[in-house]
Amino acid sequence: MDREQAKTILSAWRPGVDDPAGHAALEEALALMESDPELAEWFAAQQEEDAAIRAELRAIEPPPGLRDAILAQAKTIDFPAERPAAPSLLARWAAIAACAVLAGLGLYVSQLPQQIDPRYLAAELPRLDKKHAHSFESRTGDLEAIRSWLAAHGGPSDFQIPAGLVGRGAIGCEVASVEGAKISILCFPIAGGEPVHLYVVARDRLTTPPPEGAPVIATRNSAVLASWSSGELSYFLSGRDSAEELQRFL
Image (cartoon, rainbow, N blue to C red; front, side, top):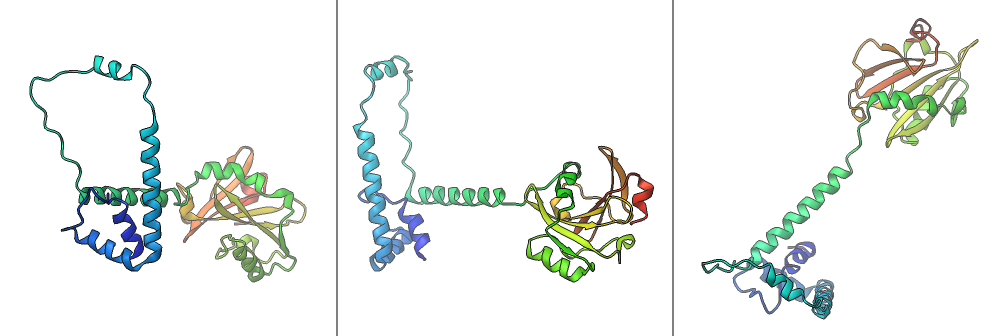
């Protein structure tokens, strides 16, 4: 038995009320406390805190007339009712353990990554570009340098560049966050027009990821957007005025 297990057991024990005899776990916890000064100090502090709470509760004066008001609402029964037995020490341990498990489960669930609706993400993409003032730029389009920078900043880095964007020279990039999900953004300057932006996000962060295979091209809020998934990543490509113009970069 370690110290934390002993604390769980000792927190349910009422000295002077519960007899430790016959309760092997409690006897083991008490034996550990005798040899563990830190555990003994913790238990003493717990007892002082419990005593203080009991004293505060006992000092509370009930409102005048409360007893009569309660009795006025009381119901009588025609047969003697058996007083329910106080929960056993084992039952209290089980209750404490169950609460600990539920608390841990609640914490675990609360910390699970939140999934994003792709429609919401698509609506957020235009604001992520920061007017092309990206945090890192490789004038030669050095993908290894870009991958290293994105990975160091928590963004997806094991992506594949669409064939129509390979070898186009300068690439700017940055890492943005949407609902806690890291988005890698790559900006490809295009001669004679607006840049094309590629957004990469972990596929499991989306409620309904884009399909595998050929990109799906759609117009959202007057913007043309291509989307697809491959492996563990999902991709979104934007930056042209028509599906035909965007298609040549895929």
